[in-house]
Length: 381
Image 1: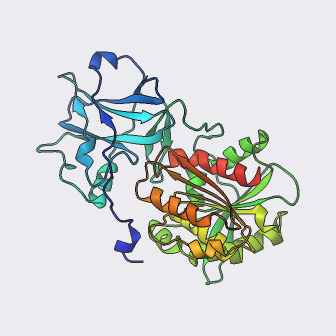
Image 2: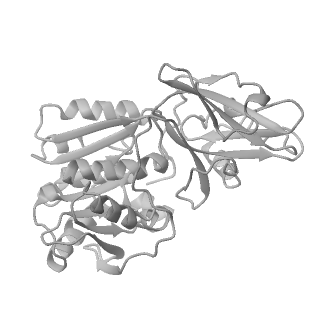
Image 3: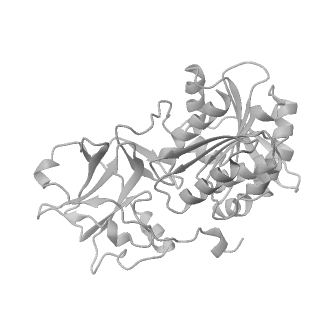
């Protein structure tokens, strides 16, 4: 896959982000940030606040509200001469998103002005800062702490666990292509003939989101049945781009190596409908391909914000037979949302048992970390 094929097409946001005038500074000082004011009609005004007295400009980067082709539209406005910067959006009350701030303290105009390239803006994000006035936070895939805003009607996430849990035992498996790949195994609950859940991007879910602890909590609460989880490593960024999002690579490794090994070595089911794979973005597309290409091995999938701009196994899924799919996408994902709706329409009146969810958010682990457990509960609960 060459560089141009590795990046989704940069489609401009079809409508401007719902930015509204910010309230006077006196109405936000001394209150928890961001400041949320209900409009009484299912929407709220969310005012982000940044104290940066030395800055000549502040960019608020909110997942999928900030358009990377037009970052200047997300510049914050100075509130008088006290060093505070404000920006307000009016959002529906079920919204959740991660966000951070980029400050410009050097000479000249802020570097994001006039930038329309993803690479340049992502470089600036390496120095982005979380919101010290907000206790809600997560860690992005790059390992940086980012803040999280969530409105009152956002889907509950009762089983989140803080990062820092040690990885479970590792096993190195020989792939059919001669490669050796690591997997990590965790049993949530106890029992025999357990459902098997294969989790792609395993390092991310282990190190950033302590998913084994979240699974344990969901099982203890009776939301999930006892299950056996196998976390599959994705390696470096370059390896991930080459490995995910198509019928070979990690998809073949899961079907031909991981699942047969688990069935031979662990006390897990041989029922494809109780054998699930989960993935996000390119991993979500890999989960779809696993379901489409190997329905007799993997009969259930949680696909979150799948990279359908790259490929879409529509015909293969329609022919896969009675498989189970939990497919979700964010309403703020203006590139992926219509592609997911198209896939949903294509799977109507097919043997695919489809649960389709649109959440108010973006391409965001702040949303996926709850949706993953929701998806497993829908498939296995």
